[in-house]
Length: 324
Ligand SMILES: Nc1nc2c(ncn2[C@@H]2O[C@H](COP(=O)(O)OP(=O)(O)OP(=O)(O)O)[C@@H](O)[C@H]2O)c(=O)[nH]1
Image (cartoon, rainbow, N blue to C red; front, side):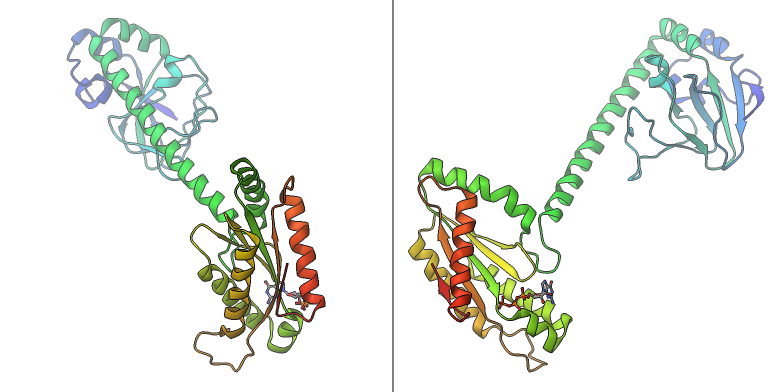
């Protein structure tokens, strides 16, 4: 970064500086006259130590990376901001006397007006217009930072949702079950309402994979997942909690009704095609079903253990059936 001139000797005037917009005061112009005009070649960083200074772009474009403290002040998706001719950077660091940690790079050859912090304060004392412009600018930056924060929160929620869903089947996954089942059990206990689960294990799935290949196995799993999801009420939940282990979580549902739901699932699974157009003559898949309900004094652990035991009985009894 080389000094090429001073502001007073340059071709620029107060009108070129947004922060000084409306401040047609000869005294302000005179105070800025000795300030350095620096040249930064395109692609180079603004290496000016860590001191807080106010920089105003006179020509070219600066790219400013978020500093380590503010974590972005309303820029592009990557958090960088482009500073165009007339715009300023570093005013916040000057005002709160902080080290300027923002990384600044010239996207093309740039001319920068550099104003030392002491002069910024003197000018604020002298010019109401500058003080007002600074307040406006800072208010805009706070607003932009809030918008960015909200966007990040939304993105965070999106990724959280993604992390609770199984990629192959789109059903809720085990992480979802671990988080939600205790809550559903607590609510059921508090409301005195029933809560049932149906544990489902696809039958001879290893053999299916070995015979038809893993891709067909994946298709079978997806198709079984769709059968289960599409057969439930909107208030129920379909979960893939292990490899070929699925589950239906049924709030407000007594054991008798849960058993009927499981029978319906078993029947639909028996007849569901693995590939919708049946290009390949694959056998239908079947499942074994274990039904359990939250007992008095029970919790999510006893509920899952009871469903697991019922599923074991269904396997032992010959598969493709429902046990309670
Ligand atoms: N294609 C495919 N196979 C999977 C997936 N997850 C688990 N499996 C397979 O599912 C099979 C489960 O085998 P086992 O636990 O022995 O059970 P099984 O063959 O279904 O036998 P039973 O449960 O006793 O009827 C294994 O071969 C796993 O590789 C998956 O995402 N895709």
